Amino acid sequence: MAKAELKTKATQVSVAGYIAALDSPQRRDEAAALDALFRRVTGCEPQMWGPSIIGYGSYHYKYESGREGTMCRAGFSPRKAALTLYAMQIASQCEGRGGELAAKLGKHTTGKGCLYIKKLADVDLGVLEQLVAMSWERMNAAYPT
Image (cartoon, rainbow, N blue to C red):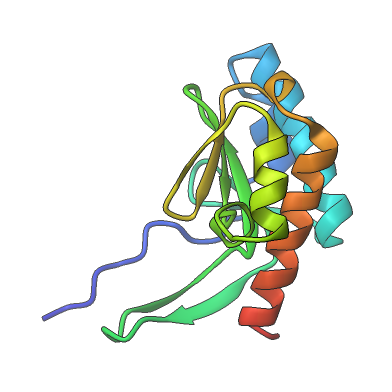
């Protein structure tokens, strides 16, 4: 049985070009603000992953099933319905400081591995930056380079 091809891979698409081409001026501004935040926290230049994820760093994973791949350590996608931040469950759904920060964040929802924000104006950007930093630290601890 052939292995399924991973759809979300790093690409050579320009992040700046992708952000500039977003339909909504609000999403362009929010994407630029998130890009600046992620660059500050990670110290990484962004790279497009698949058609719509702006990612920072990368890590290799392998599941018990044998499936493995490479994905960005942190990232976001400025989707129409919501800004989707990836690898954020590590910080936002944890007990302790992560849970306390998530409670102070503002309007958001979470899913498996993601944090969803309808618009950046709904959240405290300082708290968001702390959550991204916590998530980044935990990803680096879980997947050392």
